[in-house]
Length: 381
Image 1 (cartoon, rainbow, N blue to C red):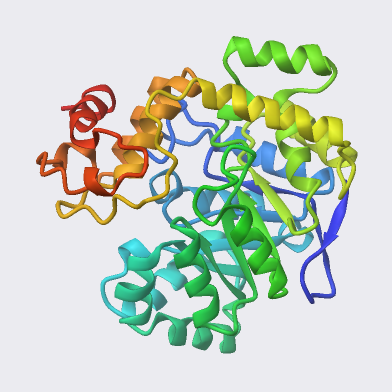
Image 2: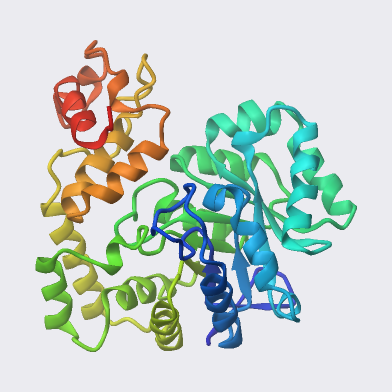
């Protein structure tokens, strides 16, 4: 296992961390009522730790609020002492200030620990930052928990635009780390490469989530799989996606939601082969070619610029288009339907055809005509 410096801490983190959003379940569904296969999950977590992984990430919401308890069981028998443990404050569930402390105490009980090493505000966007975290004084509650020894380091995970990411980073000078979605298909989405480099320029360790886009980049369509096999048959698509991240000096840690021993072995091999500057210019050009191959499968020419926003009826236009395009790009309609269903707020069905967005779209996309098609493909009603 390779290790990297974690900011100013006198500690090095394994290049690969264990994410627990995708633990093995009875029916392979995620973040639902499906029951986790505890024995398999515990065995997988311990297998990774035994092979050098020293960072385990979970969250209150994962697997219908059951993942933390399974992680707590996995970290018995001396495993807690071998890792740094991260979990998250579920901002979307907090409606009053007291909720923060109540939920934190519940998490400590589930995780069977007296402290959490890295505690994050979960899935922060601009609205949650302003309307919940700032309005309810949750920064002060986070600092009080840190002073009480319940948590050690303060950070946040993020899903929104770069401008909101920069604002949140600049609005509080005691952040100790952050977590963003980033992969070779999300270079310009959400915080993106600009956010990665901006956070690193401020000295913050940056943790990467969704490095393989929820597994989509590990299981490409057949036409793209052939490209990987022709370039280097010895390396899997997942290997390429992970090493592309570790090639960048700003990346501190990559989390992977591994739910099988074979995935752990493959990802550890990738970590062992990784390092800043280990990919050649030819390798990087190959990844760029793969990105373009995916882009050619895109149906709606949306660039995600968000000039169409905000929608007066609350439709999350770029996000809706992304889910629609991803269904075709990755030949995985089922996954995109699940993701679309999870993001209930802002679905395409809320469009009333006012066309206010169309006058602002640089790509001149007939947005109001596309919205019924998006919901018809992805929606369940």
